[in-house]
View (spheres, rainbow, N blue to C red):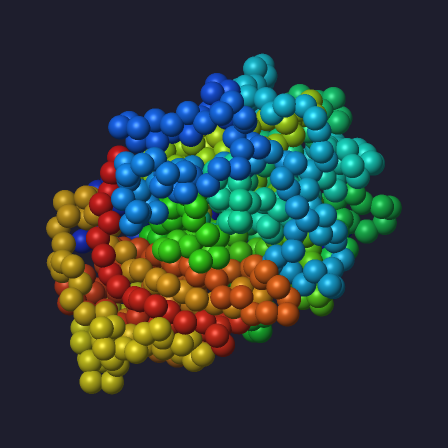
Length: 613
């Protein structure tokens, strides 16, 4: 066991006051404008849905009684055959429908996101086959609610129970649906090309649960069944997974029980970055290289500010937090206008890459989606990601609600439950934790008080750059990100907005049509009105808007595949922090960090996004 101790003494404010030009009174009550307020010491019912395809109310077409899980109908071609009911110049968006995972019999070996000729994990990522029909999900009737504990707080008794459950899962034959290997394959199948959208009528289009609004609900369901399977294996209906509390200074090292030496440890994984074993402090803005000379205290302070940005500033509406819309027929690679959510592109990708072994051919295990599920740390990373969803909703901030579009609510996946039965689950059934009978241990959340404060407030910085930096409309797009790029975004929609204006709409910076080589780990940082050497930034500056990060997602190791995405950054608070709310222009600086030699940016703009309850 290591002897590392990282002490945090958090001093909450004794009073609350509304900030000048604050986003709103209700926000300032919960998230006070302060930084470095803690001292750190570092010592080394859907049976019919399966048979029916719903069209607009003017014309409902009932398909044959074949299950949607096995039907192979191209919906758009079918609509074209309705005899003039619809124009031949169809708008694909008009026929949007929720993503539907098909029957597992359609699953094929995975081949994307990694070099299939040089792997240490299997490419055969499909779940074990079964002839049993897919069941309708039923909410659990457990008497007790499972409470997921923070991993750094658990007792020796809990650690022993957790290891016993993981060992029992590892001891099962690989072809058992509850085995450690079968559970690891789930992530690979959904993330690395195992499924297509055949159940939605698009058999040649890949199904992907990353880089859009399926990210949070898919992983919530994945963990839900994984947790219940572990409990079943040790005959404990109250068993709950721990969460790696990396957003809390006390939990920013990998919990010791994952790395303990001595006897065989079922929670250990051989493919981890050996430089990041305890007592290393995690970097929640990790770009692939350790920052030399950064103390434990500095890293923790930076992590706190990064978390505030990703959970508050950049997460003011459902699409900014969950990710952009992704419906049936949308291509996971060439999607027209996707965007990745603030947490997924930020701390989620950073932790994956921080844990993965850079010496392995595909950065196995955690550094690549196809292999991540083979490391028990993957599941405790994602329990904390799931907890971020819960915390985000509980902030009592207008706009912090799940997407309401039917294509999000009715998106569905197929999992084996704890009774070895295949069940279909829907996004709309996982939004309330009390119905799923689990919750999280409450711990301090110091990043709530880590809103950045500008070192010096300077107005009209963008205006001063007019002579040296091209305006967005005059810049040559697509903009190649092979070096630091600066772009002036002119004519913000509204300047000097009132509190009421800010209550009703968030100002958002959109970086659109990001084209990147999906064979590489890609990351770049974004700054607003920065006048210093941003290449040396740690991410704790008030001008730091956030990052775009992507793990590899390549279709062919011998070909460079361009993938398209987008990212959104909140400007309302950031412009308040740097004293630029009255500025007509903003200066955007893009800083390539890793894998950006071929990255191009198609558009940079500012827009107002309405806030709804």
